[in-house]
Image (cartoon, rainbow, N blue to C red; front, top):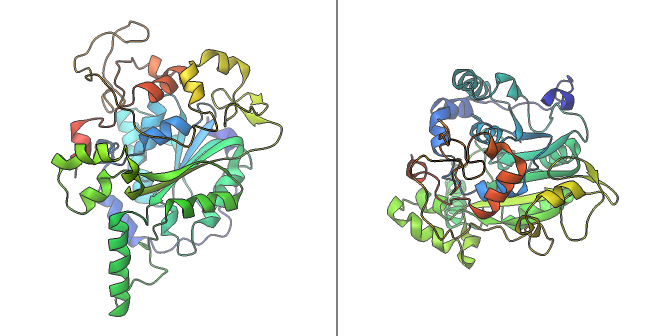
Length: 374
């Protein structure tokens, strides 16, 4: 598992700030409530398209671990690291109680000094973390580049400075500064939204080749400004247009490239770079994947990552697995994993299957309780 990627050195001289505010924040949440909100933030189409299906993937600053649990259920070898012990211990307790994963999938670590060897990980996720560092995000992203192997993928998300609520955020900060009530730059809850292009520049400065950079999720800023659930469908349709640039989250995806060899995106086999795909892909995996899935990674298309318009009703009754014909049983925590197809627990963990589902059958609205949760 993750042990091959670990070393036992202590974090390298990074002093943790006072954590009282964050500890209080996480004590107000539970793993179950976080899982119920897993599709509130419009990220899954990016995560499931770009995360490698081999090797170890770390979520740096995983909080209560909802995406670690979700990705492991899909067969990805995801682990989480978190500096704040209340969140970390809650994730471990839930893992033991739900028997979802071993509690060893979670480690205490500062994302600016990860306890992993150079070139040892296949994937890196950072969701709403690096905008909180007063010194800026560059140090954390350089650390991501260090631990990723050639062909490794980094997915980084922060609040978008181009979202309408981002402008509100800056206006409030300006007013607070004028009246002498601005937060000190070293406070724990410091937050600095970034425009998508600026976030992309951070990844480039660290050495990554950019695969995708843009804004996602119009629902979140609508919710933050008091828009009710009855408007969510309209916001979803607006996200299929140029209005997506006002989405609440800036997200950038980078790949660690080398001129001669990268790990295959699916199986990890060392492979020569290919002109028709932007990720590593060995001949065996190329033969196994459907043509439309391979085409989604063409350099000319890979930067277009939008939700699909599914022209069918979602299945609601348990039936047979659409892949193997076996009995379909919804997962006790993640139901149908957010796919518009019934797939059993064994089949959904197969890389070719879940990559194909992510390309053809990923539901924008996963569960009614998700986007309506508070």
